[in-house]
Length: 161
Length: 291
Ligand SMILES: Cc1cc2nc3c(=O)[nH]c(=O)nc-3n(C[C@H](O)[C@H](O)[C@H](O)COP(=O)(O)OP(=O)(O)OC[C@H]3O[C@@H](n4cnc5c(N)ncnc54)[C@H](O)[C@@H]3O)c2cc1C
Ligand code: FES
Ligand code: FES
Image (cartoon, rainbow over all chains, first blue to last red; front, side, top):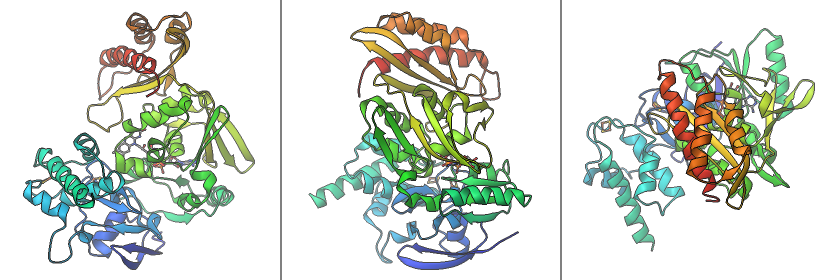
């Protein structure tokens, strides 16, 4: 009963076609079929947020979406952030604020933050803190992650002002 | 932590979804509808659910009737596929603004981006915010099955332990809220921010100036299904000055009336204490007016 489906979707600006079993999650298709292993998988039931990616600009749990549900969707993963040479402003801010230690949770936090800042560019610290509570980090204690995202929000506002 | 295999079917419209459910069941299968997948997928990864086939309502998102929020007279109608986040960010009429305010309690933003109103109600968790709100604001669930459409009032929807009156061959198309409540609030306690509540309370007050003339009290987490608490509503109906003394009387009546479970999560006594605190808080919040 593996019933393969031909799936077309856009990942980080590239159109992809993959033959997938319906039970394959979006997280597994990204990692195993498209070899984009930046998206991490922790709990596989929606609690930790390590697998967070943007689907049509909204942050979602890639472990709570069957890949076949992403037909025609525009998916962005952590691999879209840097330009191959330099880190993005948000990634640089994570580095400067010590917002990661082991780094396992980082791709999920980065994509969650990108989704939140795109929807609420004016977000202040409290709103950022509330939004970031979606994801778990076992290392940092969170304050530095909030600092990093808040600093990026502030500097993006200054550069667009 | 991987779901069991299933066959996958995309529905093109509501009639197609209903037809697929009937055909797959007639062929001996055990099909299920998937909307946002935010409850069904965790159940499938734990293999608590092993449907033989999934009928995906995703393509129906291009139908405005499935995804729009419509205010008509004293009613607010939500398409079945309206997401928690769409409600959270919608400008709703005063009588239904409590829906938007309550959404911050539903999981986290990435869950709210995908999870739907109808999915929550059909899943029927006894503490799900949508289930409490359905009882608070007299929701009517409109479901389409092989023999046409029918309307299920919220009072008949929840059978307890995740069972609801929506049949396996029916697809919910919209949810209509019919009782505006400009003075309403929902509050809750969960161990971790974003988790399902241990106990949650929703209150709607009928106010005449500074006086209370009636209202509703709905609780989750104290029984196998969300419940209204007639004993607490009787205190509101007998009236009084809006204020802490009245809220305490309502809260005491609610705490005395419920018979909450003792289970792995916590004790009955603790749930009763939460009931008292949360009902009083919800009353105070509801009286605070339109925010
Ligand atoms: C980490 C986490 C935390 C969460 N916290 C909360 C919380 O605090 N409060 C809360 O209320 N929820 C919470 N949820 C659950 C979330 O709200 C779900 O979105 C919701 O319960 C189900 O909606 P869905 O669209 O995802 O439904 P699905 O998961 O797709 O489906 C759920 C059930 O409903 C049926 N169904 C769905 N749509 C229809 C329809 N139109 N017609 C007929 N049947 C249908 C499905 O067959 C299935 O049985 C949480 C989930 C996660 C993963
Ligand atoms: S792996 Fe998806 S939320 Fe944990
Ligand atoms: S840095 Fe290790 S889990 Fe977050």
